[in-house]
Length: 103
Image 1 (spheres, helix red, strand yellow):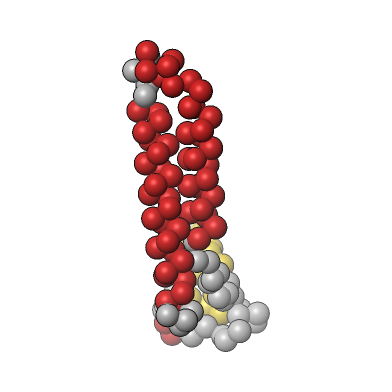
Image 2 (cartoon, rainbow, N blue to C red):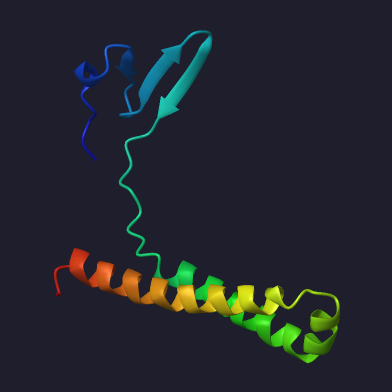
């Protein structure tokens, strides 16, 4: 871990373990020097798409009731969520491949 440059922010002080201390008004904020997570988003988007698929499949037996009560759009929402989720999974996979340089 590198020690943050206190000159980057004039109000920042660095303590002995490399944590920046910002005092704004009567509050004190501690900012740790950590690396960001390397998250591609594939799993998150895939889980969302699968949840939309399961919701749509769960509503399918009630298609008649949904149609009678003008709630058929619930099925279309699930279909759109699943379809867009699949595009999202593909996008995230291509993005991850590009970021890791195996393109």
